[in-house]
Length: 82
Image 1 (cartoon, helix red, strand yellow):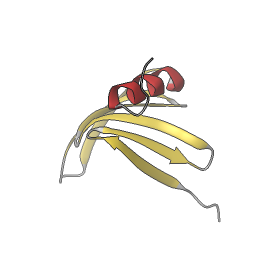
Image 2 (cartoon, helix red, strand yellow):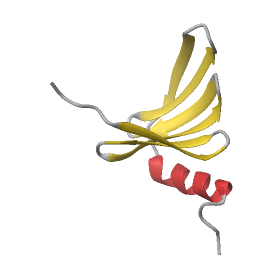
Image 3 (cartoon, rainbow, N blue to C red):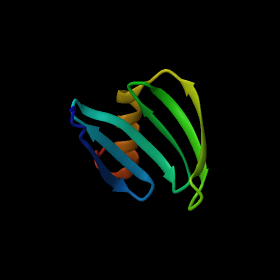
């Protein structure tokens, strides 16, 4: 039986990093019920109704993880620009 590992690290309110077995898997920006995430498998916009289990997503492009990661870390203050 294969094992799965995933850990969510909250950087700031509405910004989180998702880490899997192979390292950084995705970055998510948004509130509960709506947000944008990007990772190795592309970029998605997600919307849902909290508490109902209903949600929808739309894939909007190819993954571009590194530039978005740098921008998110700059915006959250984790990395300080010189």
